[in-house]
Length: 218
Image 1 (cartoon, rainbow, N blue to C red):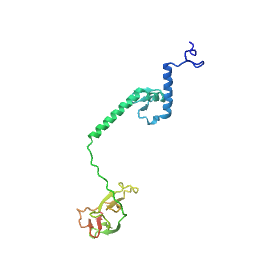
Image 2 (cartoon, rainbow, N blue to C red):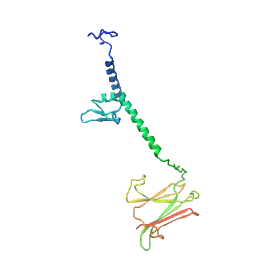
Image 3 (cartoon, rainbow, N blue to C red):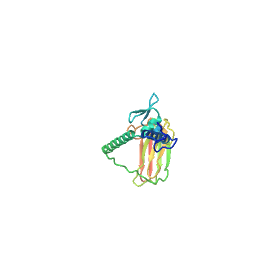
């Protein structure tokens, strides 16, 4: 059969391409374009089998190479399944949002910090049991009206400023508008206030604006 003399063909061109040949050429161009623009490493649906073939986990189809898989991803079946999967995902998210009760948003308190307060630390020893302890005295002359200092003990693994050291814990004190301060103390068991109320105590002098706290180690 003389292909080069078909209607509409130039001499030496091989004739006008048929529908099947045009489809093959189109798929080849799409494959090359996809290879240049798509990163297969980020495709969640591609799976390499032990035989060296590629499987589309979304459509459950097998492909001999990357080009065949990419041509499949540009096809109608894969695009339809992608749209169906996206619709299911959006529907499930909408149901989750609908079933979650509304949470009251607590507005974060913002204030201008004026620096660190003055403080004094004294090592003490209980005269009867000879237990060691610490006495903290913090001066807060510019504390906010009606505000009372708040303190707590924090483990070394809660803070993010220093490399955690299990040998220490932190005594943290906060009082607006001062910066929050923390003191590293030995990570030892402490005497509870219920055990010895006279040795373990804290006191806030609202007139002098001085906070005191004393505790003992077991």
